[in-house]
Amino acid sequence: MPNPKRRHSQQRSAKRRTHYLAETVTLSKDSTTGETHVRHRAHVSEGKLYYKGKLVAEKAPLKA
Image (cartoon, rainbow, N blue to C red; front, side, top):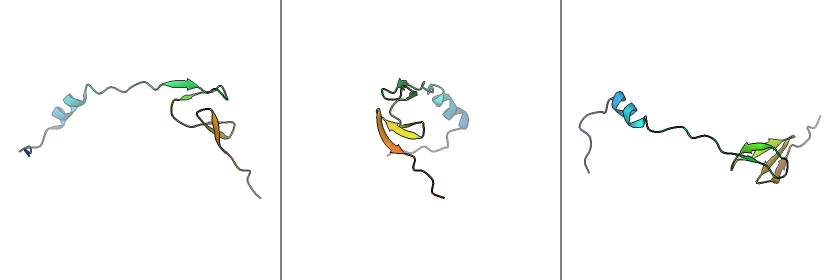
């Protein structure tokens, strides 16, 4: 398998990467809480963790 003889310069690598653009984040509205959140990510609402409109975890009260 061929390998490069010399190291590519930083400028050459940067020129190749100029076409990679940051994509905008897709937002959704939760059916249960009505909050806007990032799609396919769990989100916290009023101390509770939700994912796909379902309650995943609750924050346990602190013991003194």
